[in-house]
Length: 129
Image 1 (cartoon, rainbow, N blue to C red):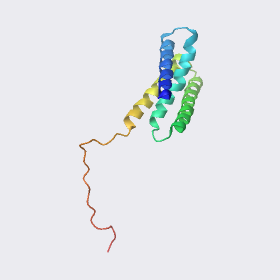
Image 2: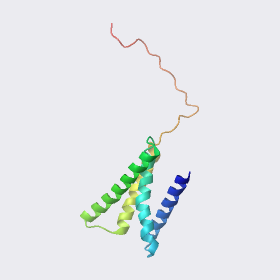
Image 3: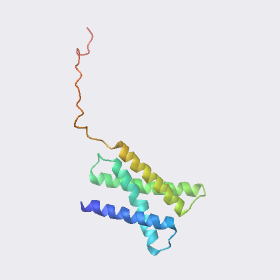
Image 4: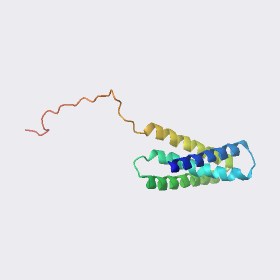
């Protein structure tokens, strides 16, 4: 429970930093809070997709994917000569929204209570002759 509260606090602080950056606010805390957004928000999206792994494996894979996503966005923007802090932040936001939508769509749902499955009888054992 404490870990979830800590993660939620870090993501909320990151969202604050992203909002400050997009608003153009110059503050000593803006850079640090934006870095929290760039690192923790994609990690949360990736972790939501990996429900089958244990907590430590999920944290390691999500952290590595988050760093890889940030590096990929920065590299593509540098190669195309379109680097800007706001543009990179918006690209990360779009990727995070995509990850969140994928996690919500692909989430396994329990069967409904009134959904009764009808067994299909098997005729024969499938062998010829």
